[in-house]
Length: 548
Image 1 (cartoon, one colour):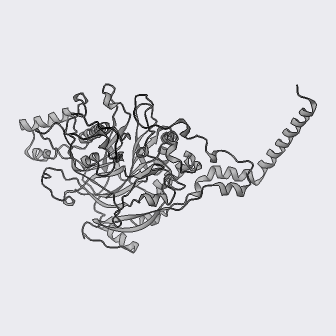
Image 2 (tube, rainbow, N blue to C red; image 1 turned 45 degrees about the horizontal axis):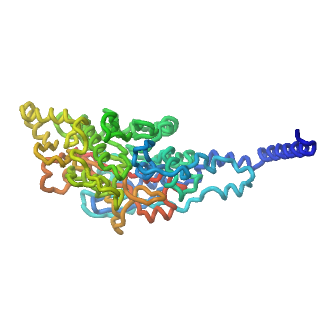
Image 3 (cartoon, helix red, strand yellow; image 1 turned 90 degrees about the horizontal axis):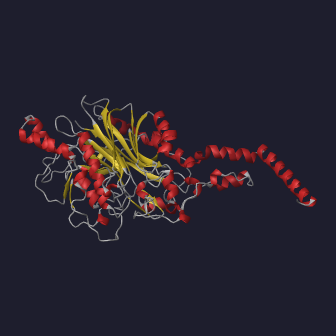
């Protein structure tokens, strides 16, 4: 039992503490702390919507015209950044992992009340933006084939009148850093103020960017399931979007989402793709894809449709064999969904975080439709590492026959059916001619891969003036491009090359895009995420016109 002097000392301390609590709760400090808890997002400034809408217009491919806007992106993350640690929790997995002392605490400074601080001190402790990322809208004037600087809004409106009889739409691809992945990979965000890494801080920024950019179709990656159900989906539905979602298999809680405005599209079909196969050791990863078939609601034929696909491929730089197999599975599903009754493909937009850099073998395969992988080291497929470790090359074939995917990245059953129709002459003559769009080469090397789409990138990957590389993701370990918007370009915009006679007419014309920035530009605002950009990826945005 304590002595009486100690008992009196304890009672006096408790009385003083209770008095201090009452004074604090009735004072201005308590009110200020509660206000900042609820309204912490108001410190993030965003661009004026009218400035952005005024900038929609066309401009020539390879001839770019800029209208500057100041974009303060959201606070999110992407798997493209999924560097070292986005690893599997299996002992045999060779994905990069972080040490326990690098794990990010889930308790952030802005989630605790600094009762001992005065209001002025608390305000000073809030993160101050170091600037905004300046991005511009780049127009492509296909008709004039030259650059015309439009300096007045009325000129832009006049230009848009020429498009009224054709269907145009915008597409955004955005990896919105999953909160769980952020906390599992804290070593990537050592440059960040921990206060800005909480979901309560990041989500209002993310949602604000989506509102400002106002895309007709959203392709989102690293969408965490609990946050999707409670906040993301309800918020987007309130903005007029219909949402489709596919969560990753296994224990990872995030996935891919495609959301579209119901005022411009209706849903014809939704087709999730799981890359995990229990009986195939190569496919033991839990990445997924999502393929939608959408019908435009106006300025189109009744049979018009657009295929939109979204994915997030494996991060591991040393497993190019898995990446190529995942991509082949996605392309097989796209082929199955996008092919029409007449044998032609509907236009395609393919978005995602491909965890591959521009002009890597995987990137070139997507763009060119073919790849000979004989002798190709597994670590060089994605180009993520300049000097990849290990000398293991891709096996022949890359994936087992039991997967049911051919070298043409088609389901084997579907390919056999098409071949039988040709041989038996069961199809009509015009259908046979149209079916030539599907490239099926009966004689080829066992190391040849093909797919039936001729895809273009909405971005050039280098700034037009300085020729410095663009980046889409940035964190403590560097910056690079891994996010893309690919699209099937209309034939009159594709340079005629030998061997392209049977490539289908892609049906889409690029009208414009939101420019990207360099690594230096990002570090001038303390990299990503920062106070106003809440993901370690930037949103990509492009505008297309449907050509029928």
